[in-house]
Length: 479
Image (tube, rainbow, N blue to C red):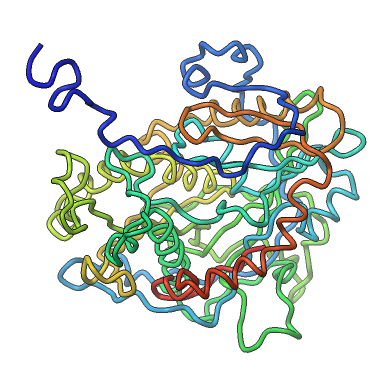
């Protein structure tokens, strides 16, 4: 049988690195299980629910509203390399608004106007569309109103908006223990997640030009309070509210995000902006001007940042398994494809979500920054080693993300809730198995924990695990 029996050395095989995770939220005795979805079988088409999956694309897409503004991309970041890296700066004057669906005033207005039957944000949609790639536990809250209208939401106290690091790796980050030293804490999943989120926020704003090149849309940022700004301003984001006709009477309204405008140096952008809003058309110097049209040659883009993490950074760590990580500084300039291939293996779910969000928003370009610590033991200072540009449709094909399957997964969750009575539901992934369960929960579920958030945050700050661990700053505002 060879050394160590069937499991190889030590006889434990793949269980050597097994991590037992806790559920993102505890299932309570008064919760009613509605459905269980095996993600592995769903991906293979062998699930009993496969017959409910409709992978056809939306029958139509329509823009309902545009809010916010976009700044121009600074193409100097295309020239960044390991020889001329760009220090990642702290963005301390920008506000970010990860507002959930039910708290969005524009979505509330569109719901009152009966513009849709399902409402969600692009982050929640992309998460559900690509969830078979997920490994960590998560949950999404669904409110079903009288008349059958569905609101897909996130819990206020959840970690939903924080980016994961090496979630799909063979050597994922090890959770911190009670006796963990600072180096181990720095590379724990929670701290890496906070670091990655702050890097992403800072990068999205740093690579943009000044507001001199700004394009404003129909309405201001709906979450920005000009009278209570304290010297802050909104981050460069355009909220594009879109309606997707999924057939069978399902009209999905989503708030999608775009992060900037970029020049197309390869060919002219032939994408059309779908709109039937007559209010968008305004007279300017005797001509009809549509503010939804971006300057000639510009394209809408989304921006994200990957951050380098090497499991062997930790002291006394065993050697990383072959192929699990590579040194970016050795490869990124001449073998960028190898770096991306490694990231596709280690961060498959995160990259799939970003791609899905870019497609939902109708972005023509997706900019991805490759950001690394200045020193492996310093989680607060970073440099940008490269910026790569991808076309979302092409990138989806490259990472084997099938758009039909994306829509099929979303339709499945909608169908599973269509026959349920009005009320509140929770869709949650099992912490240790590729299974998603849907529960019916009492109407007041989670409301008491939301009211306790403030005290929890105070406790975090006291024990040293608060916002000061966030790298370059740019505190994320949790709604």
